[in-house]
Length: 166
Length: 282
Image (tube, rainbow over all chains, first blue to last red; front, side, top):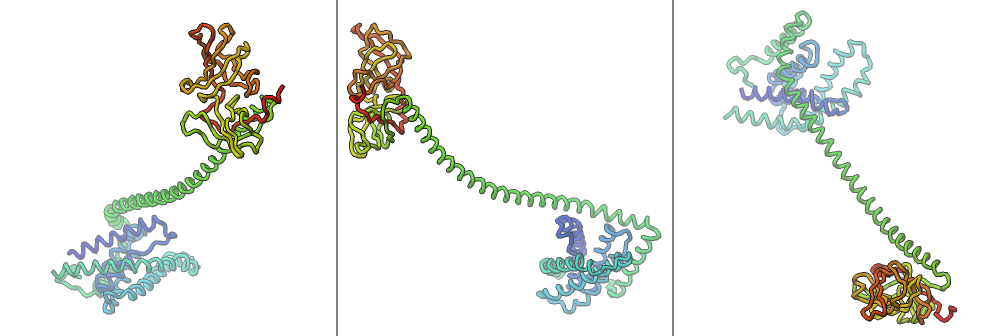
């Protein structure tokens, strides 16, 4: 129960940060995908089920606020969380390289799907411009933040584990 | 993760269920947008206040950051301005000094023009008696520059003193306010002869004392006192001061006048020394 509540709080915090502060301070109009980091981290640390659920609720919030229909981001985050869960067996506490690689692939995948759905279908064909102007900066930004944020999540996860065991 | 520990569903089925929920929601948002709007409404009710507060925090921090930057900027500017001010101040000091010198020299020049009949040379005061109301001082010219003992010294607008000791490089001047100074003078325009004495006690009040004035002389306050033609050591017609007060002596034969000197002895810098001796003027 503690885990569910703390995860819910984490999701809300990340969503709020992503939608307010990082947009507000205008890092070249690029927003690091904090929710993706959260989904990836817990998918990696805890496995498919938790990654999937966190992705699902993160996506729900994003859908509720930024898209006209409910569903697409939910599904996207959920799938990413689920797939990341497969790497759970490779997970080691001190390892930073694996989450870094995974988040880069995740972010690339995420952004390409968004591009496919909301731009390509509108006949915006210049993928190169989108890639260099949006996808690449966001990937770098997110990857950089992952290095810091992932450590925090590992720490939180450790605390939660200790709580559950006691 | 044990959201529901009793029925630990396999992730695969959970994925299936959630996917179905997604699809249902998607379809619903197209065909029954009202019910989806409900979900949106409730989530926004929960999230928007948080967003607002975070936003205000963001605005606040941004404001503070801006303030900090402003402070840094202003501090740097302040430093630069202070430095500039220092430079300007030193420049001003230099100019002030030059201006002072200019004023003194201008005064001397006008004095020089007032007495065209004399040959004069400019000398600077380099030492004073250590008392605040000095009556002797040293000037930086001596016999090498043609000065001699007994040469008249002028400053301000009139007579300042006389050289009582003349060395090669410097001279000692006794001011008219010195207690030993006694000058034969006359009061214009009545031409009444008198002798102007320095008096330390009177100089405390700012006066020189002119004694031995004939009691019948038409002397009034404001009259000019100049050196007289009968003086051996002082050239004729140099202003000493102006009459400030007159009193009849107790002997009922003479009057005593109190004279305000024209030279400000508390602030004396450059003086003019007359290089002619009295005898050369006829």
